[in-house]
Length: 339
View 1 (cartoon, one colour):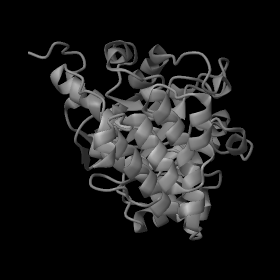
View 2 (cartoon, helix red, strand yellow):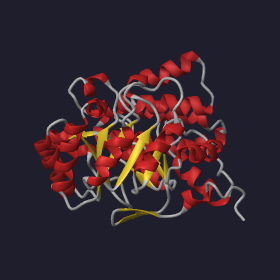
View 3 (cartoon, one colour):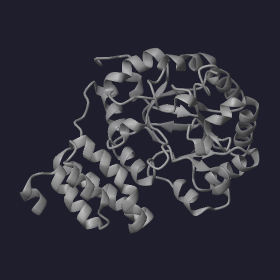
């Protein structure tokens, strides 16, 4: 018998429209983080679903190089492309382009709180005008045969908690699943996620609901599910420096035992592989810079080095030198390092 039957369903497959996913622990779309190399790692460790970085529908439709890279498939399993925008025409064109790029599922971003996104009336700013938001949803759903999902927040601020209404109207418009980050836009990432606030969304719809916000350890699962009533969970910032976390949480849901986090030589190999994949994707100059935030998170996970070494790693521009220092930090066995 599973030691905690309340979380065991997270280990079971789930359908999003006609698409089946192997478990119900997902990696969140995170701009500048969940690019192809990061998603590949999360899939390798068993995440049930990974979602691309937010991609502007208009840019993808027009063939913008950065947008096309963001929409690339990460590996085996369903491919989800997240779109953002404020015009129905371009959301529809972006959905068609995403489908042409091999997307199995298209996700609409109505949750991003960043000022540069909300200032352009995209992301969570759309929760201030549900009629306009529904126009974008209807255009996206109407433009593709792929299932379309929606990611949102609880509302714009504490005085406008309208996620249940948006979810209900989105379901009527053909949305196949909703993900709710348990904060308002005005909270950004401050305070704690209101998992109980997600239950009103679950009660409002019959499609699957995914709970997101502050999931960083398996001990969170029982309470998160009990309060939210959600069908699945999504790991965001908790996976930074721990791309294995969604998969390990899924394994915990299945067995009651949390797999050991990679350490020593195994972790060093992961970090070096991640670094090499980033350089392969972006080129050396951009890839070295893109890797620095990930290296900082990995360093935090293994115990922060002295300021001098950390500064040296995060300012070094030669990939080989960076990786030599990282391996020495992560795997202290000199014989293994020399092998």
